[in-house]
Length: 361
Image (tube, rainbow, N blue to C red; front, side, top):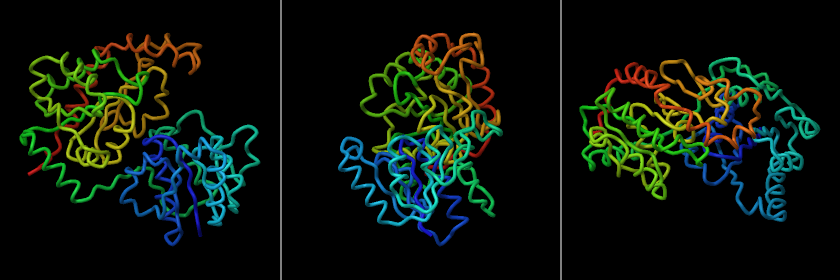
């Protein structure tokens, strides 16, 4: 059997949708399972034996109809038996329609059901603590009536060398070995997904006051000015616990660093999803325009929990569309005072810092 799974989009989406490949591998151990993704997301798939081939959807496929046609012909030539479209947007509709796959599965959307042999409801509300991001992906497997146990957890695979390189970097920066280490998801993928910097400084202060820990900032070199703003607004006692310049050189080295940390706190995004895939406890601060019910995955109030302005000021969200909330996001962020959830951060730290300290010798 030859299978193609489609999930263009960002790192978090690609990582979460990899559970489709993982469960297909369990059900069909001898199948060829290919995964169509953006090139920038491939580092989170390294080491995943559930995926045989990664097919890249590149910028040229978006800009050129000729290049898109070439990609479609390439896919058609593979003669896939099964195609699962987890992206379900114009580009994947075109690929699915012309793929020639015998069976095609995606979400049920008005005017698009004719593209697929099987469609499943795009559920509006989660039924479990897995969150909609997970539940929706798993629903795409339902038409197959698999007789295997479903694993809902995305997984990242870290090599021994990557672990050793991360430990060496900890040693280079003299990270204290007698303390646990907290990774801060400092900045979102855009300003509308980034908790205000002056508020984030308070959050970092709360962490430093509540526990004697090492603190690492997750940011790209091009974001150093924003990262420095957060650092400068922290109390001196907090700054002493922050290893500001300890960064990975690329996404894989960052994954290695996260694997040496004990938990992650901060903005929703790829860093949080990668930490969860490494079985690290997470505390998420959601943007006002992002729906918590989708990405608050595995929420149990202990190892994984999140906060949203709507939890504290629900009246601000009444009769407002996602488009309106996105437009007002920066104004709403300023109403999302860190004092609202200070006690939750302290509780989260108390419950998740009792595990054994990472030994990075």
